[in-house]
Length: 428
Image (cartoon, rainbow, N blue to C red; front, side, top):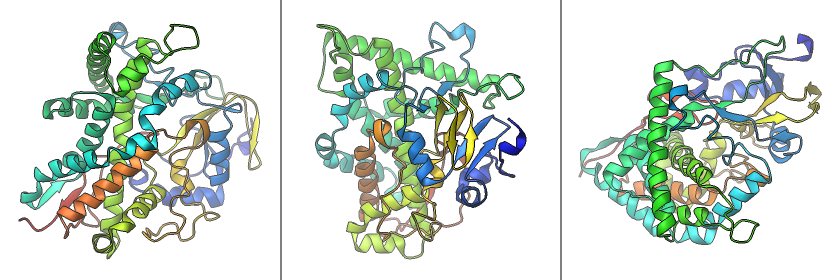
């Protein structure tokens, strides 16, 4: 395809800290100048407009989810981390594989079951706040958002959630996100596909922790085989398949799903909590308004998710030549559906850069996906994030999240994790 038919966006660098900190400016420019563009450095297409992203994530026949892989597992580790372990994951599979896994997990994430967790989540929030309230300051990501997200999921899945257990899960959490990579096709000239950058030593270190996580879940699976419990792990392990007496999911896939949930699942919710607090701190009067009227918290959380997607985007593979907004994308191409852009589409949201806790359509975003891949954990993430913000403001009514503080993100094309966020208040 001639370069004239592959529009590009000058200055687009998805791994720069400037872009990771606030992608809105670059993606808004893309929506105006090149709403569908090609990124030659990594050989994928970027789709930025709300309607186009909605189309890409909804039409699985044209846009396949089999577009995500992991960075190569060191060969001497294949006995502990199979190189294809992620191929049937929730986010990297199409029907019927995705349908079977989703059905096995859906019961645990039903709204009726999640709602019963509200008091438990509030109790976890208070327990975490007790650990730092007297100090007058804390890293709200390290000491609150991440441990809360991990402990909540641990209880839902059926994992031990003591301090040492949670510390271990928290060490694992960034690793799966870091090794996720699109399935880059060969470059147009036929040369090999590029790779998401990572030093070999770091790659091995991350896979060592993933191997530890898989071994941990294998032990739990063996226990639940002998003695099932009322938890997600048992329900997925013992879910019935189509054949009489058969299992819906093999053990290895259950283990992959458990690693996926405790790592990527906790990272997205922690991001949402952190960004809600960050935007509230940057918006004059917002924290005080929520402290005075806690009924605004739910909408404030939705507005935070609109303003900054926890998941930057998701990859799809074109199963045929397809035209999007006048641009022809060839069969086999990789497409990044930019969730991070959709909350800023001027056709959907006015004055999108402004964080507005009263925005009437704040919840009309795409940041939990849509259709078959709508995030099954969305009800839990919403409840958990709102409960976290509400409880913080109840316990620390003069909470200040300083505007302008320097923030850092772990580079990722899918879930760039907010690493630190300072909060201050009057110590008791």
